[in-house]
Length: 133
Figure 1 (cartoon, helix red, strand yellow):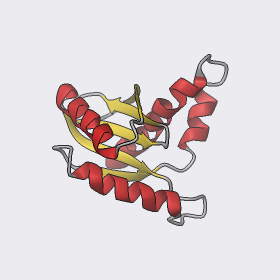
Figure 2 (tube, helix red, strand yellow):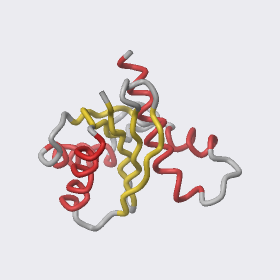
Figure 3 (cartoon, rainbow, N blue to C red):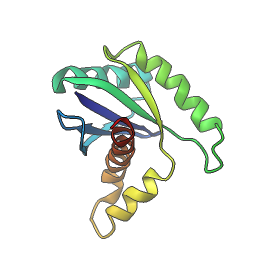
Figure 4 (tube, rainbow, N blue to C red):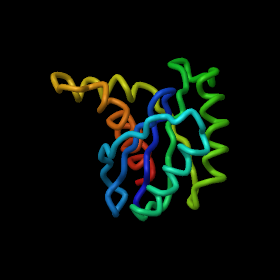
């Protein structure tokens, strides 16, 4: 089953997708925020249908002490909204340090800002896939 990883940002939504066996996550791309969650979620739902995705995994920004801060509460609210739009289960997974790991992987590559969100989504999704094995 393919899984779609999502890194929710205020300006962009990073996307990653797994292979059909659910073993390897790969950066997929970005959705530029439209200003309306519903419109953004409809784009995600279209992608789910087009790519044959069986579940969505959204990164939860838990703080380094493991506490649910304001960003995580906002993400949880958006995840609940997203779950009403996409036709597959929506899961969450701790995304601590994913952006830092993605930045390390992309060191020296041009246009890192355009790639970091999708790469962070891939790091998070890979962690989720590994936890499911």
